[in-house]
Image 1: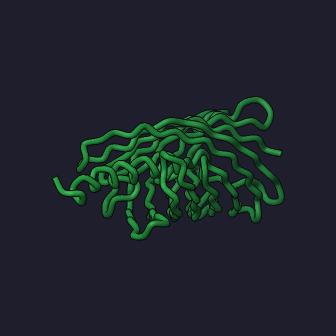
Image 2: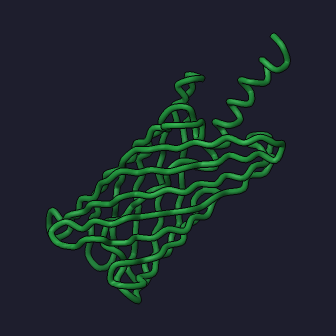
Image 3: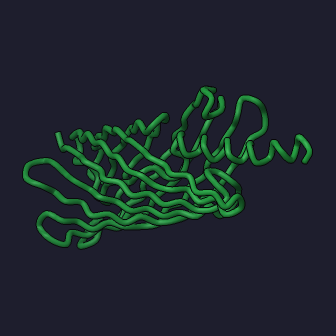
Length: 216
């Protein structure tokens, strides 16, 4: 086996591990299509686990994520948020387009992370942008169901040269439980498939998590 052939599996493994640790792929939605009320703040946190399946390498990589977020209602139909996730930062929005029995909204996001060489992952920049379409509807006084498609793009740019990209598509579903007071609990399941490229993997991923939000 040549040195080049020997380096190929190691490079693929490095890419997989970097993607897993940097939490590439869609971050959690953990909210309905109804934005935070105008002039109000909302803070939140989330944690979960998942898996990335590389079909080319026949490899499974377990993943985990932690998120902290603050949101501000800008208008009756728009809020803006800033999220810290694992090693990265993301700016996002909830833009409600329709509000009757069902609420419909777009949820665009853009973010990235910088990882440093530490023996497990490489010195690299990770960028991503995406959008979710949220459709939500109350099913009881305290429970609201939300679901919709996800699309996104990711870039892995190591300091040593070269780069990798990927475009993914998938979907999510969650239940928002509005408890007593101003506290929300939102378990969420998301599935996605990399349609083009190799970021975060040449394959697909799944994530299960729980988000918590407080209306201030």
